[in-house]
Image (tube, rainbow, N blue to C red):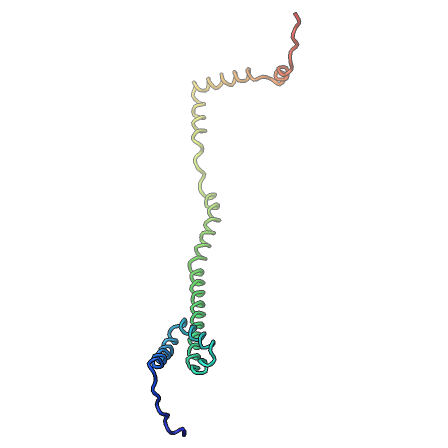
Length: 166
């Protein structure tokens, strides 16, 4: 057979035609879907004869998987950049502001004017100046001084007293 003469066409069966259409479909789909590319590549790697027959398909699968891997790496870098930008523009300033406000809160409270004195203390002073309450308080103080036991009285009350024999 000379290379110039075309080979005679052999009549193919229906199964062979469908098989060829399936392989053509794989050639078209492996460029778009990395999952199909991985499956086809695994099948081709398992059978050396198929690998030799469909070498272009194997190379297309490898290219698709390489492009997919590069796309994932690029998306990861973009995600890291966006997260870093969000941290720099939103989270860190808010956290710094919150920290400064927390620390500055104590200083701000100290800078505030002094609060009005306790109202109960003012009421006691006012009542102490009235004549009726002043005399009641003086009587209370005199009565409390006479009823408070001294230290010797407390010590004497703790010791038992002898009982007289009758």
